[in-house]
Figure 1 (cartoon, one colour):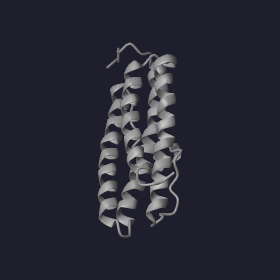
Figure 2 (cartoon, one colour):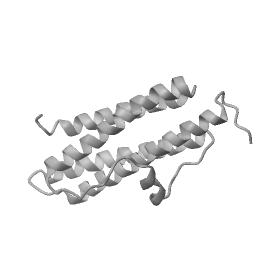
Figure 3 (cartoon, rainbow, N blue to C red):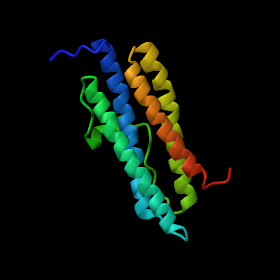
Figure 4 (cartoon, rainbow, N blue to C red):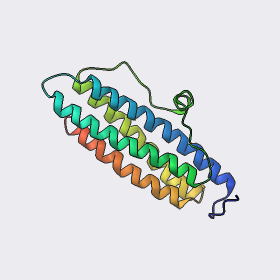
Length: 157
């Protein structure tokens, strides 16, 4: 069925491609956070175990929302891990077991996504005339900013 939501097919395709790249990075961050949840050690084990669990649960919801946004604008969300890793800009280094390295790594990834979202918010609105996806990314931005703040709160800078 033809989609008529006030955004050209060309623009919806471009937005979907960018959202799939975002989806890939969200997956990498989710997996990294979950892995740190499993690998955390030290005197604050339970605190970090719970912190990471709360964040990966939130990231799982965000992943679902990104995929559903892609479907909403008439395209398919990438779900194959092999393809997601090709699209992702975030990397998975060796798993550090020390908490400061985990926090620094996760904070950096959130900040990378935050910068990307700021750019997408403007592009989706101005370049692709998709204010819905722009607004959607604003919501994601707020969530990533809060998660990064929570992580930064454990580190003195």
